[in-house]
Length: 495
Ligand code: AMP
Ligand code: MG
Image (cartoon, rainbow, N blue to C red; front, side, top):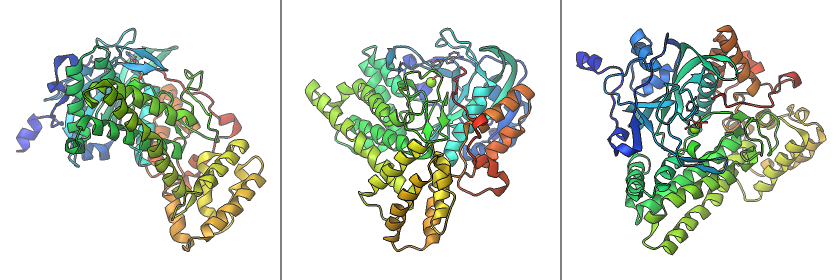
């Protein structure tokens, strides 16, 4: 038994995507790197995936994580996909620097992709070098693990290794490889790839695969593809609501960065807002504000229309019927989003028995926050303390009286619910994190690692972010908004 397990390597692969037709991917070995060094291994995630963390940390394990050796059972491949980038369709993108090693079944019985990001050139690389720089790798590691700790569906980071090689961006940077875990890497753009080629067989095949892997309940429906569309729409609506509730801005909501499984994927120039404003944009490449914080629901819906278009022929026999079915499905996005958002916002405000008119209370505070540049995360975290006494919420508003007016309305609203302060406060604390990956902390951690080879700030930040809802008095500064000189105005893709 032990001997067999050792012989099989650390991963018990079962590669269903590699069994799909040839035109879904290109088989591609990772390109070895000079001197792999393990920066970080996510041991608890490794255990959840049924992997032996100790084995992964050995020289042989690190060689797997760097792409220098393909583990037993791995069938490395680059997935084909297309996508709308900032509204323009690109018929061929595909994994240009990511290689899917294979799939494992985790402790919950869920199939998970294991992908190496930065593993070398593939036939989809176009002008790119197939590599990733250390900064963006650490950024994705921090942000995706923080999202997971916040309870938001996301890809995960299993490991980061440095390559000992230089990648050239604006200048020379240390290279790295991220081992990314996802419930799959299928994107809206994967469907678009085949739709653009009029390849109806592939669309059907892919849709059936996605139903089997992510939406098995659709098999019970009268039209399973309509049920698939409904499921994808519903998960995206809930996902984007969750982003908004923690102040997250994805930054590049292109259709190739929209997961069919409803996970947050492809952490590029993403950011958590400091002071609240719905038009906030951090991404240096989003010059028109297409992917601004408050536009994200509209964009998600736009992306879902693109998805619906790809499966139109599967929705009904006739075109009119198919368009109608797609429209009906899309019409459910807005109410789905609003329900998820309103429910989440009620929890943030400590309203245990939400009412429809609570929406105006929510919008009211957001307007006041926007006008007064109040810190998004800290306003709601301090509001938890305000339940049973004075709290320093008003200090976060440029004009503190803007909060006072709202506060009296909120207090009379919560007074209408008979509830002890303690359970209300506990519920609010579970909905309002103290710790988010603030941009200045992320930049600080990345700069220390990239320019000084000092990974301690990265490690500490990860530790703090792993329990975002707990007060951590020793790490109080991690909850603070940036000082004026620390404010990050722009984030970069760094690809
Ligand atoms: P992203 O901006 O990471 O969502 O990537 C968009 C597209 O560009 C995808 O097809 C990527 O595979 C490709 N790409 C990004 N960076 C690189 C790179 N350094 N080398 C090759 N392809 C890349
Ligand atoms: Mg992408």
